[in-house]
Image 1 (tube, rainbow, N blue to C red):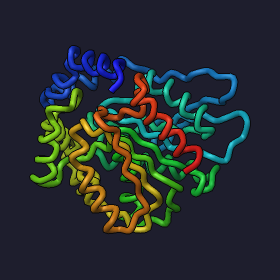
Image 2: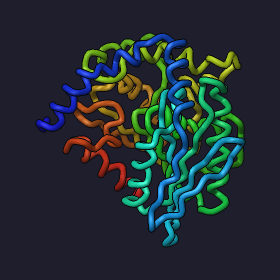
Image 3: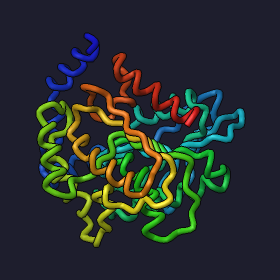
Length: 301
């Protein structure tokens, strides 16, 4: 590992992010509500892009459109544990992704489980994708998601199949550290085995996340909480990207089983010794490699 990575890892341990993820369901939701209320959606300016907001299902969808026309587009679903809205630094990173990948980017500010049900988030994600299909061929669309957004990205396929919708599947899904909950004791045991290596998210957070996603009291379909249980029939290409040192990597074997069960063309990229969502935090050479792999997937499939 590079010296930069070792310093970064030590710094993350010092600020103790794990403590934040160890809060109770109530504390996490209250904290997230305060953070979300203090934030605002900032429209960036760039000479090469038209950046705007539209409303989809009553929620904002940000569009980053190249002034020089491109046929490629990406639905970029930013994570936040289903309780935090995309932050300004994530939007600046999204613009960088749009520039380097040559894709128009659509970023949904989907409903959060602080005040809405998880099913509403899936409804809005699907509606956003339908809006994209008005302007792009499905074969030219990538759905990219990080953490909880990685779940929603791959979950789009399960949603289409569960609701028997006649929606064309995108060209590919790129799911980075998908934030699925443990569906059984074996999956949770695998998460616990990695727990001591994860500098960000303790395994027990996924128990709390399960309660957060059921917070509305609505009868939520299993696949929305345990995505590995989803129906991936007629799925497009899927690429998973995990760090080997993140607790969520414990769910990877179950995703592989699901992909094989439905004959999905999938790829599993694992960054050795890397942390949660490392490709979108390219602050060291190892994470930069993940960033480059992500961009290459979007450019070349």
